[in-house]
Amino acid sequence: MIAIFLGGMLVLGAPNPDRVYEDEMIRLELPKSWQIEGEAGEYRLESDSQQSASLLLITSDAEQPLEARLAEIEQQFVSTGIITLESSEAWDVEDQDVLYRRYRLMVAGTEDRSEAILLHQFSFTRDGVQLLLQVESPPTRRPPKELIEAMVRTLEILRAPDPFVYEDLAP
Image 1 (tube, rainbow, N blue to C red):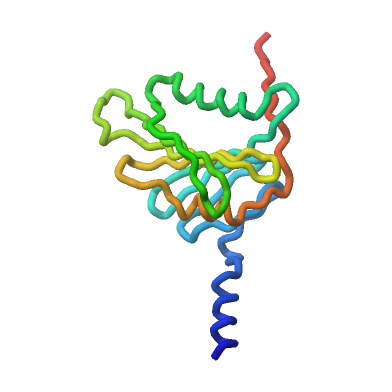
Image 2 (cartoon, rainbow, N blue to C red):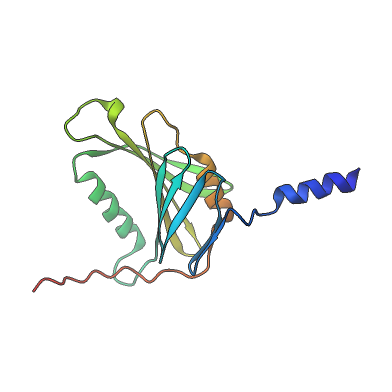
């Protein structure tokens, strides 16, 4: 009886190879309702429930500290005037410090808050790489905790992406 119970526990705790995604940069196990595609540290995720998300891996470089890069990304968001920061708080997810920010994206031509899109942004560090997971949802949906919990629990950095380099190609 104990052997059957322990065997069942091992099966429950074992990774599901059908849910594991791996490329040259990352390896992770997704919740069963999510799919992922992408490469080189930039990924798009879709769920069976019509939610979408993006995952971005950011490596620090010698020219710009990581904190400055993250502030720059946020400034690009809010400078549009149609995206506002609604909430910012620190979460403890699976013993990992995660910064959660919720933005509201107003649909052009309307002031109706019920027609807005919420952007749930999760930020944490793994092996010296900053990860930004951003999930889009209607205002009535809660952030998909199962997705961020799976990321925090299973995401491995296999190779850090090269730092982003901006090249002005204008003559």
